[in-house]
Figure 1 (spheres, rainbow, N blue to C red):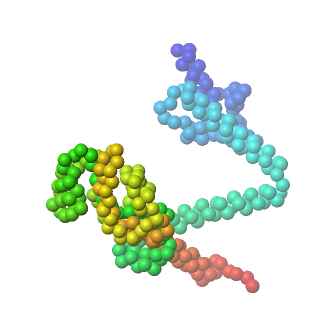
Figure 2 (cartoon, rainbow, N blue to C red; figure 1 turned 120 degrees about the vertical axis):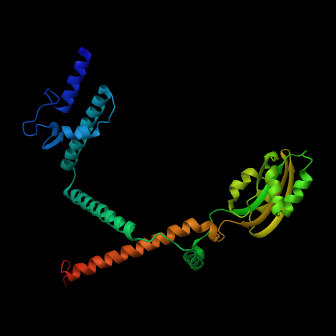
Figure 3 (cartoon, helix red, strand yellow; figure 1 turned 120 degrees about the horizontal axis):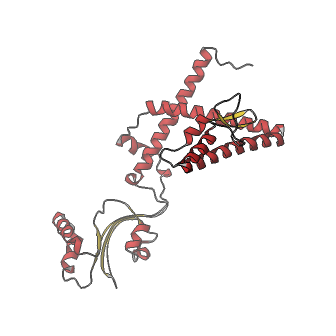
Length: 287
């Protein structure tokens, strides 16, 4: 009981309900918890930062730390203002004003753009932009389209599997899919682009065979090593600095087109604001 009462007294002290040497009552600000010169930290400010469900000890620790941090910032600011030149003060105030202006204007423009901008991009628009700007879509890494199977060396079905893999018609695909659990590993979706560096993790022997090459290769490669027997069909290969294929560049295309729309719309808003202000004689330029 005594311990609990002590905790309540400590918390009351912290929130400024009663006075002591550290938390004194303010005659001008009865709800104040602390003061630095003419700046007051109010009890309501402390209540806002106290998390729900914390123990009394934790709440006291958090609040005390907040009070000390608040006071230190104020005191450091006072010292800084006393010890920097007027030129620095003017420069800092200019930066503060510019930052404040940027925050307000950016927030305003973002809300306007979010309401008005059309985020739908047609396939035709993507293709047109891609064709007109191919030079900016350069790969920073190699890409490859392939399928492969990694088989156990002693599997008696390997010959039939190899034939199905090379033909790869609908019946073959279905058969290979049904047997995939028996493979060491496999990948059959040769219609998508993969990063060559990631493929090398699965097929390390490929690096020496395809490094620096590009184009529609249609190669079939076979490889034996201590881990088994590999069958690889390489359809297409692109190296670093080649033009990125449109299907691979699609996410980037979308972002570029949207950003272009946003910039154009913001320019319209800015021009409209200037023209309206001139008409209303809110904005004038003196000769």
